Length: 367
Image 1 (cartoon, helix red, strand yellow):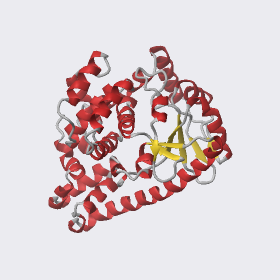
Image 2 (tube, one colour):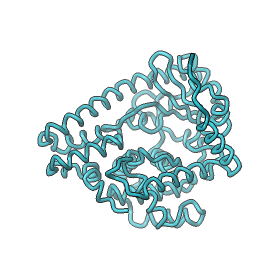
Image 3 (cartoon, one colour):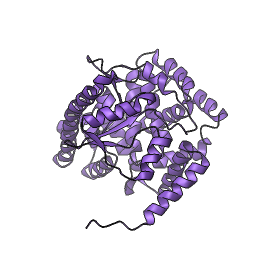
Image 4 (cartoon, rainbow, N blue to C red):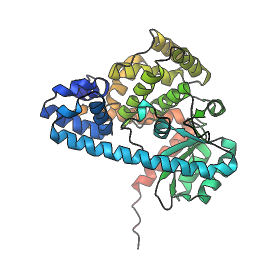
């Protein structure tokens, strides 16, 4: 699929100076696509950082400014929320190991610039999961999903607890004990991730994954899950991480070696390929090809032609201007692929039948 339909959006993300020459019609499409991709605040921050803000027309600037203010407020609230999580875990002697957007923000990384953060993800040792859940419940985070099947599905098969919501603040917390389900075909060792965490700032109790592990988790999350409506935002995260960390020459060999140890060569290959194709992200010569060969030997990636046909559609914003007639099929196929990668066939068949049956049931009205 051609990426011409999103050329203005992609340029705004990796070549922000290009926004200085946009017409109002181009701004209109950019704002619509950027909103669907949850990237408006990022685009606005790019405009400010690269000297384009003052020349941005008033109409699109209002949309960008609104998104930027929301992102700023979310970041402020996030700092308070992380402190509360850290206090809740302190009696257990467990740090708050942050993942994804919360990690980027608390560590002050470039990936946090204009990054919307709707919930907090943390990683804890699996053997302490019950203690962690109890400590968080004592601090006000409770289960909101009372469905017995969903509870069993999360607790028996998945890599995280069902989402927790704070009774007063309404904040959502996802507690992970791994970065992929234990039934998944790829099996990165969570103990290796936890032993190499680093402090996000001055507080040693608030930690993030090491640089290679942060990239690998982002890649695994994006290319293993199958739900890609916000896929371009995940790709922008990867682009920012790779550009920032990649300034250190030692980062790249450490990243490739770590991918082999953690069984994540396939997701890393895909991360390097699609950040290059869509974001022009630089990487060492030959690294993408080496990872691709290693992953194909293990059957961890699809044939290149099919893979591109699917991901180059599904990673674009879920907007009519960024889709063709094959886009819904590509998203559907990758959704099924994500489930196939996470579950053995018998469990997958039962799970999909259960979801289908539940979707056909009429909703119960509340008296």
